[in-house]
Length: 65
Image (tube, rainbow, N blue to C red; front, top):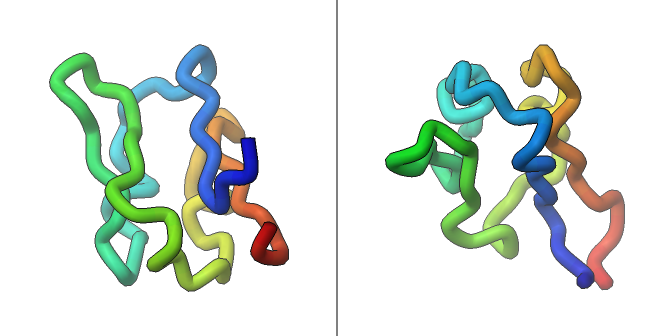
């Protein structure tokens, strides 16, 4: 799986910190309160969501696959 933005569903607590900080608004919380990505190709790769996530549930790939 060569995704740009990866969410570890087991670690995500649904706090929404990543959704708040995402400048391109590609992150959202689904009905179960788990972070999801609408279009990883639009990610700016600045990794703000990684730093904002208190549980480390988000990883952003450095380079395109």
